[in-house]
Image (cartoon, rainbow, N blue to C red; front, side, top):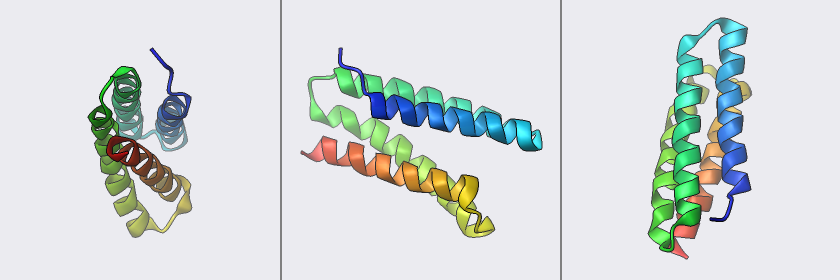
Length: 104
C-alpha cells in the first residue's frame, strides 16, 4: 500500500494545531476537533492511497472541505491568519488536491 506523505503531514499539522490551541488557551474543543479531524484525515487518505478506484479520493476531499468551511468561517469572524486562516487555506488546497485526484 502506498503512503500518502502529504496527506499524513496535513493530518499531523491539524493535530498539532489542536494541541497548540489547547496549550495556549486551555481549549478542549480545539484539542478534540484537532484530534478527530487528524484521525479522519489520516484514515481517509490512507484508504484513498490504497484503493484501486479514483472515487476513493472523494472522502478525504469532503473532510478537507468541511474543515475549510469551519475554519474559513472562524477566519471571517476573527480576521486572524493564525490559526484559522492558515488552516482554512491549507484545507482548501488539500480539498482541491483530492478533488482533482478523484476527477482525473
